[in-house]
Length: 252
Ligand SMILES: CC(C)(COP(=O)(O)OP(=O)(O)OC[C@H]1O[C@@H](n2cnc3c(N)ncnc32)[C@H](O)[C@@H]1OP(=O)(O)O)[C@@H](O)C(=O)NCCC(=O)NCCS
Image 1 (cartoon, rainbow, N blue to C red):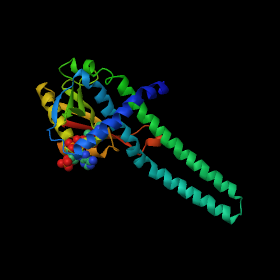
Image 2 (cartoon, helix red, strand yellow):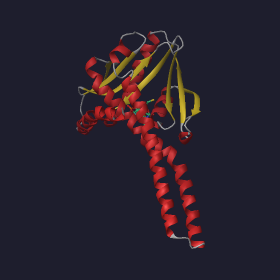
Image 3 (tube, rainbow, N blue to C red):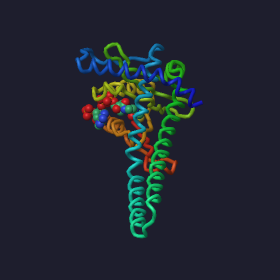
Image 4 (cartoon, rainbow, N blue to C red):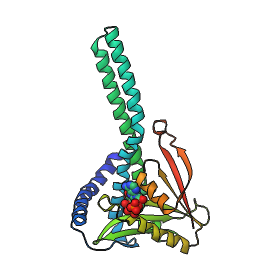
């Protein structure tokens, strides 16, 4: 199953690096044009899946920065203790080598666990709402997907979802992502403007969203825009318990 998904993903990654280089070139050379926000069209599907995947892939290293420091301290302290014991009792140096190997294996398995967890989430989104964005977001007035277009290229996206799992009058912001080469240009803010305008038009009284404590740029964006943090729940997985699940709300 994973191999199949990985094989499916590879062409996207090749496309991504080419697209990013082109985008970076246009950013460097100025590009010239304004960013336009418009509704999703079927031909945007590939770019949207790509931009979402890029954004979420970066989450792995952001989460690692939160989760790893604690374990590095524990493993370093443990290694020091064994090192002192090896010296004091003249144990064979193999014990210390064995310990170092165990620490490296532990760190590798922690990273792998994190990697798999993030990819499980990405794969599940690509296999559900992002598989057929037209059907999931565009066939019902209460749901919508917008893209940001710059110099003829799709460089950002955001979705508004309302289904039977949501309370009446409540919409959920989903899949916010901007291409790395086009960040800090105010694109996410423009996408938010459009989403909230539509939500108001649909008589929603609230827009909710969930994110993680690792997504610092996203948290700053939502707070700056006026979203209020309502709940903060530690991840259920023990190994990721330093990570929080944040729920934000915007009253319309
Ligand atoms: C979060 C994200 C969508 C922001 O997109 P963006 O187009 O760069 O954001 P904007 O340029 O509109 O920034 C608006 C405000 O957000 C905050 N912000 C955005 N990126 C930031 C960063 N890297 N560091 C600190 N604050 C940041 C700032 O307050 C900024 O206002 P300012 O530029 O006046 O200071 C983008 O970084 C991204 O795609 N990240 C990966 C995917 C992700 O985490 N999505 C959120 C899922 S919930």
